[in-house]
Length: 330
Ligand code: UT7
Image (tube, rainbow, N blue to C red; front, side, top):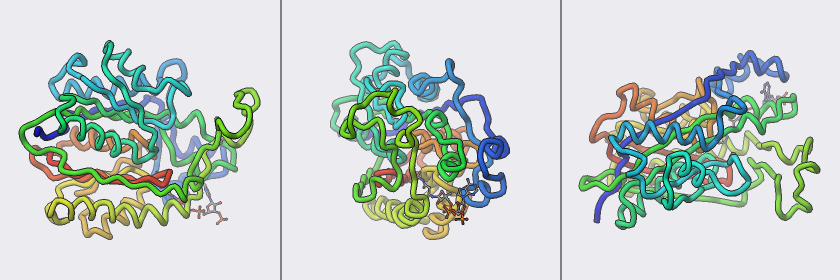
């Protein structure tokens, strides 16, 4: 049975930088509050008419393929992760396939919020190890700025989220790559962080009736999400290490979903990991949901922080609640 490994990672972020100071012109907030509570200084917002969720994913995917020394034609399956698709349906995977010139290549969309990339990697791992596919693209892409409530009412959510895309190429290999993935969910907390509409069970689903309705904006109970995140993140990392007989000391790099700098710092402290082994780029991008882990991994790779043979853990927690981890050798 072949192993599955990450052969290349890439990312794309829109060029428009939105600082905390700019946000303070729209709502009652401040650079000091945002930095102190989240560690975020700026995020990227898409350019309408230029950036699309699928298009940004395609740019990230092309970079990942190039770094893997592969062509789009080598891809035999697409896993597309987003909660902010360009269309209500079809999903982003088919649009990305079209952008890459792929006809007949299967495409699967995953809607698992901040954990989606870890879920996507798990799917790719199973396909590759079973021998069904040899080269799977896993893409996370989000345009979240278009659904933010920029009034004072939405400030605790709006200051956190940003736009961007990241991608990984998962290929068959004769040496170990992905060692394990662990996936979890607990739907009892579904409404702690959610967007209610468009809802198919909530009455007639016409956009014209929804406009201006707060149901279309993201709602978050930040304190509840925070409390669960600081429990489940370290547990997910420990679960991955234990399943493979590894210790925290053996870990070369932890790439946590970029939810909040304070959450990442807590995980590092809880696990006894030095800051140098924990990737953090939330300062520049905010929380990019499904794109956050592949963007962070791609940047870490660019910065020379990822070496062949390194033991790397990816961990995520978010809306659902869903959470999980992937442990891999680079
Ligand atoms: O990706 C996974 C999903 N998301 C997360 O993991 C997020 C987890 N949660 C968090 O990161 C934090 O809960 C937040 C950053 C969202 C909020 O930080 P907090 O320290 O939990 O603040 P809080 O919600 O307890 O609010 C403290 C105060 C409140 O004012 P009062 O009631 O003390 O007068 C808020 O109204 O801060 C106020 N506040 C703000 N002030 C300025 C809330 N948002 C803002 C804002 N600017 N943007």
